[in-house]
Image (tube, rainbow, N blue to C red; front, side):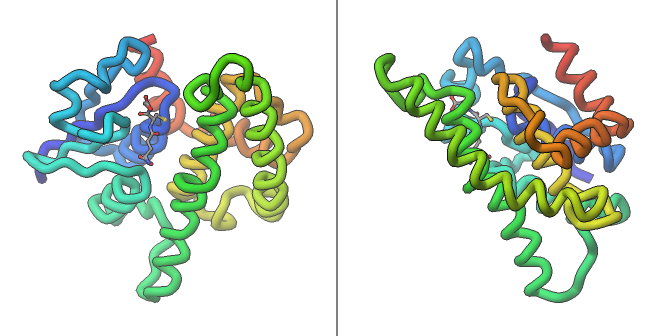
Amino acid sequence: MNELTLFAFPGACSRVSLILLEQAHADYQVHWVRLTKGEHKRPEFLAINPKAKVPALKIGNDILTENPAIISYINQLFPSAQLLPVSNNALTQLQQLSDLCFCSSTLHPMVTRFCKPEFFATSDAIISVKQKAQDALNDALVWVEQRMGQAAWWYGEQWSAMDAYLFWVLTRLQSADFSLAEWPNLHRFVQAMLTRPAVQRALAKEQQLA
Ligand SMILES: N[C@@H](CCC(=O)N[C@@H](CS)C(=O)NCC(=O)O)C(=O)O
């Protein structure tokens, strides 16, 4: 098997892949890209990912970027870990991709605006960008809260990559003081995730850099 290196930063969305690699008991290296020191904009990292974002996954001499693609790749590489529900139905597979895209394309931009409004606004408008992001999140999370009230995990009784992705969304928000007090199912879900050994190992790895 090709050597795997995950380019990551503690607390960033690379946490999803870190959890999945731990869940699959993969043999892999982590290369920390210190976003807070601007390392993602340095030539060494731009040679890995010219988009200047983590995660990036180095597979032998190849590079894969973008969360849904990396997650799908890890799922395919470790079939016995069943990181997504197994199905031969093309529509079901695309519905799973659609779920991953919901996290990456709908929720993630709102999370970034809530956590880092200064990336999107001059100082006079930072508060309103954050408030608008909070409003958008409140709307989007209604459906997620309902869904997570129906079973333990996103896909029912089977834990999956979607749970890892949703966990990152929620814990990133919490780190920026977004309260889950109004979202009891999401709160329960985060607590349940924290008891999982693969999640604990991933968070411990992140702590090593902190
Ligand atoms: N579309 C990308 C987004 C990745 C992304 O936004 N990563 C953030 C960390 S959560 C990042 O690297 N931010 C650095 C920056 O924008 O300066 C994906 O899904 O992989």
